[in-house]
Image (cartoon, rainbow, N blue to C red; front, top):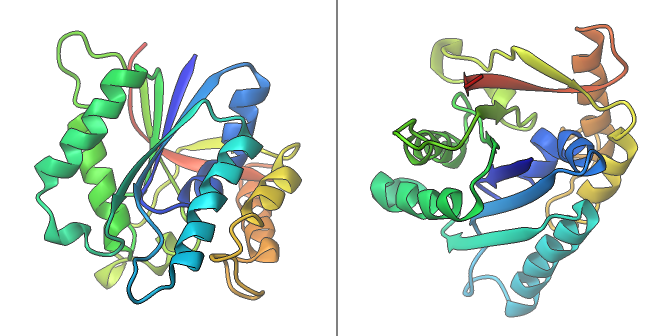
Amino acid sequence: MKVLVISAHPDDETIGAGGTLLRHVAKGDKVYWCVITQQGYSPPLPRKILEKARQQIYEVQKAYDIREVFLFGLHTMKLNTMSHIEISSKIKKVVDQVHPDIVYTTPRCDINIDHRIVYECTLVACRPLPGFLVRQLLSYEICTTSRYGLLSNAGCFNPNIFIDISDYLDRKIEIMSIYQTELCKYPHPRSPEGIKLFAQERGLSVGLKATECFELIRQLD
């Protein structure tokens, strides 16, 4: 089975679906990764920091045993200045190249506009036309921004699939620690302790030690 995970930013995939990706690899599935934006630009950031951020991506790829990573290098927090068709077309090319059975993408309801745009563009790239290959399309939860909600708490993330990551949580947190430029100190939700607590809380809601949860967008049987 082929799996494609799409990140608006490097670290989205680990926060939202890291344990699930580890499960896929353990089962022998082939995992691919598409990263839409890059972490900063020069100027104002020094090239050393930008190179370190890029190197982190390849370290994460190796840690998951991801077959291939596709880096678009678009501007973080500026996706709203681009045409959606341009982003959708880039994602569609990756989908056509990988031929994934399962696609994971960012959440539709999120305070981060990049996450919302990538969600919408993924839906366009994965629209079910004749010869459509994707059998399951899901969005993952990003604990740092999904819970901030939108105005009037409208359209909050509503999970309907829970994946048991009890055996993979510690490894997920180890991989998240590779992102030295993104990791924060507790009680920030993007801290090792915060990520662990969030997975445990989601697990408690379904009687498990730790889970990641997803919104099922479409499934073809």
